[in-house]
Length: 589
Ligand SMILES: [Zn+2]
Ligand SMILES: [Zn+2]
Image 1 (cartoon, helix red, strand yellow):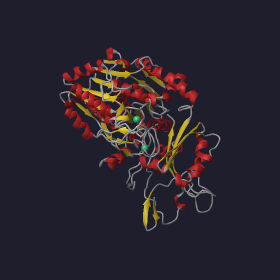
Image 2 (cartoon, helix red, strand yellow; image 1 turned 135 degrees about the vertical axis):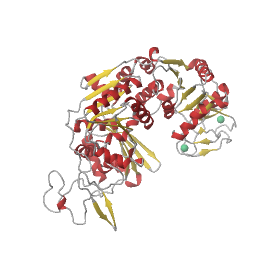
Image 3 (cartoon, helix red, strand yellow; image 1 turned 180 degrees about the horizontal axis):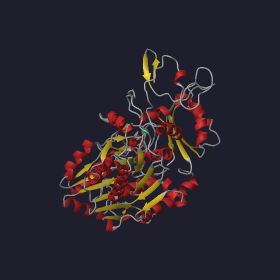
Image 4 (cartoon, protein in one colour; image 1 turned 90 degrees about the vertical axis):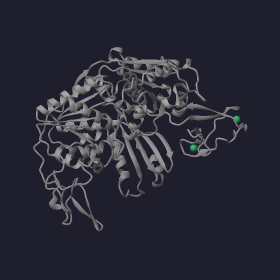
């Protein structure tokens, strides 16, 4: 629909419409009731009924506007639609199938067989991956495996071919296989017979663009609406799937093996006690066990690539006076100052930089020592052990070019240090050794889901990108080799979930309740917001972030929260100022 806006015109969707007088029409909007200067653009519906209905449900579930959901479903430039949608395929009952195996190639074989079956039935299949890199690698895998089938790689609306592919899929008459990252969950095919969500527990299935929409949840809702078969797969179940499994309420299940890191799979786990390792660095606490040093050296000598993982950037997180032990802190927010690679001191929270030559504010001593090493400190030590030219730190997000560069550099042997994002390296290179430098640091993230996230990342460091016949070792350095987490690593995801879910049930975290993270503009009256909380929402955290207020709520009454918050979104709130809500995240797990 085109509608006038000032002197220009805007194009958008008609979600519902009310005649200027009279009752609200049932069913489809009655376009005759619109004013004359509003021009309908499309001759036929843009989306299938299923996707259209879904856009409303998703908006309500993730507290985002329906327009923003539709914007993710449709091309950014809305072209007039001149062709009707083909008839929908016979709706099934939306069967659910769960498939878990640590071995990636086993899952991928299974997905290919399922896609082949769908194509034979004259239906389309969509395979959704958490990362673009894994979607691309699966695409080349499937091209070999599914010769003769029509395969498409869905890259979202960023590519030039996107619009024509979208229109083509909208008119699909079946037999197509579409592979893509999380936005492919909205592929407009009217003849969808199968959807696969790979690594269904992955946090990367959650989009951060407009609200926290989880592609797995969308796939599940869509399969219920459109009746296609849904396969959720991965190396471990998500909390929701695990709960459904325990209660027997899930669909069919194939759980190939439950104990990871078995030598016959070619993947082994070495848990190393850090308390016996020597401190090697100028930064206190840079501990690398002799076992890891010799394993790394062995791989480097044979020309292989090694990946060391640590969730702390920079050089050191703490600067302490050598004489009196005072922690150097930020002059503005008084949190500890950290040391960057260039030798400057900087506050990680407010960005204020300190002068490293400044004397201790308490005793005046010019000497200080650094604690809590970051990636750069480990890289310095590793450079001393294996040679400067043999080590590199991956900084920031991995672009395709940065990845190609570092892999070119590492040809002939190299040690790559990085945070969890660098697991992407496993997609494009053979890496026989991955090491987690500090398990306790990884577990100290403040997120409620820190445990399954780390568990999944460690599984990935063992199995991601591994081909049949290849071998990989995973080293985990820890100060507590008998912790329940280490035991669960050896025992399998079911051991992790049984402890983790019991804790979440007791303390009230998803999937037992929803968490809501709101970012409010203080100028808009954020204080009034928190003081007017209804009884069904519990305030569990408030913090000021610059000009904004960050509020975290917990509730098991989603409809209640939605209705209460809707009041704040009205353009003009009766009797009060409107509130600027910058973002809402709904965390349901
Ligand atoms: Zn001092
Ligand atoms: Zn500060």
